[in-house]
Structures are given as C-alpha cells and as structure tokens.
Image (cartoon, rainbow, N blue to C red; front, side, top):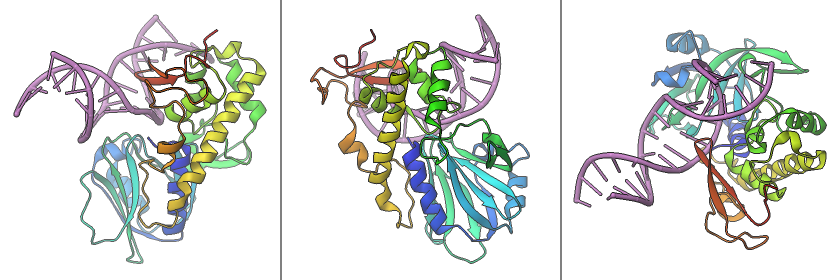
Length: 283
DNA sequence: CCCTGAGCCTGAAAGC
DNA sequence: TGCTTTCAGGCTCAGG
C-alpha cells in the first residue's frame, strides 16, 4: 500500500544507506521484477555492475537512482514491494526478487515483493519542464511535495477532466503520489463524494481537495519519518499513522468523526471507496 | 483523443 | 474441517 509518504521514507533511507556506493553485482531472481526492462535480466545485471549510485530520487510513487553514467535505475514498489538494506549473511527472504551487492562489501540492497506488481527498469534521463527524470516516467506529473508543484495548474488539469473526482485524484498524470487511502481521506476532508464529476467542481472545491491531499500526505510523512535511521527500510506503510489518523478509510460501519453518520463502503474500480453519507453528499 | 474497466499477482480472511 | 470466494490496490492497456 505504499503511497507517496511511504515511498519518501524509503527514498530517504536509500539516500542514507546506498548513495555513493558502487554496485558490484546484481542478481535478478524473478523475471517479473524487471518486466519493464525490455532487454531482459542479463542486460539489467550486466549494465549495472561497476556503476556508482549518485543519488536517490522520487517523483510521486516512483523512485530512482542516478547513476554515474547518466542513466537511472527506476523502481516502483507496486503493492507489496520493499527495499531492504540487509547484512549479507541474513537468509534470503521468501519473496526476494532482486539483489544488489556493493563493491565495499557492506550490506546489500534487496527488493522483496510478494505480489510482483513492483519492479525495476534502466532508463535514460530526459528533461521534462526543467527537471531531469527517467524517460519511462516523463508522463508522471509533479507531486504536491515537489518544490515546483503548481497548484493552479493541477486545479486546471483536474477540472478539464470529464470523470469522477476520485478517479482523477488517482490519475498520476494530473497529480502524482495519491493512492486509494489518501484519496478517500482527502475527499472526506474536502466534504466531497468520490463520484462527483470533475467538470462540475468549482475552483474552490478543486483547490480544497488537492489542498487536503497535500495536507494528509504531509502529516503521514511526519508520522512515518521516525524510521529514517533504521538500517531496515520497511515499506509496509505501517507508520503508525494508519492506526491513529484515518477518518474514513477502512472504517466501514463506524461513526464519522465529524457528523456521527455511519461510514459506508462502495465498490469502486475493483476496490473500495469509503465515504461518510452525512458530510459527503453527491448532490 | 479521452474515458472505462479488466487484468496482473499472492496470501489472508471470510463465506459456505 | 476444508474448499472456494473475496479482498487488498499499484499500474497498464485494449476497446468503446
């Protein structure tokens, strides 16, 4: 369930534990983990050996390493992916998919992913609107934590769409980083129903829901930021934030914190949407 | 071009 | 008890 805050915690951990280290070897243990890398596993393994990691970067839910040769290793955690910095003698995890070893002989980086929705690709960096990003994610919009995020532009993009507002919030080409949990929380804070049409939102409503999304993610980031020092970079998303601070997500049948009405769950895009029928009305 | 919805995947939990 | 179904939800892509 990693959304932007969880991915940022991982990025910070990587910046601390693998930046400036030289990759000595890479081992792909499951082909699905590099399915986006068209030339295949042998190419992925071969081209990374000997390269130095210059930085760990992020946009939305995507992570990447800048490499010394001007390329980047792009990663996505999918639903269940974890990047673990692990001592070499620790036994392999059951769902270990990719292993990176380093020339300094120190701890290795492991990609563990039960459901194999996540994975890596090697990509050239390209300039998009003044920022260098991997070519494969040139279409991904800036996220609300980006210093150059433009709220007015995001509001315009949202209102240009002709779809349901929740679907638009999950569209990573409009605003990136928002997933199912924070979308529901943002809609609750803005008092908007998930099925409201984007083309009928007022400017103020669009500002409110995007502002709420930014706020919810900032709060989660603060709550999840406590594990930055840990060698074990866990990305289960269990930052403690989930237990305490969610107002609607996963709270079907419980009373709304704001109006007391009973939270309901509706099917939405093969998953769920949680809303308060009292303060998030369709009309 | 834009929008919608199926499909990918595994394991836990709920249903029968 | 044990088998089957549902759910979790990131993203991509075929088809309308």
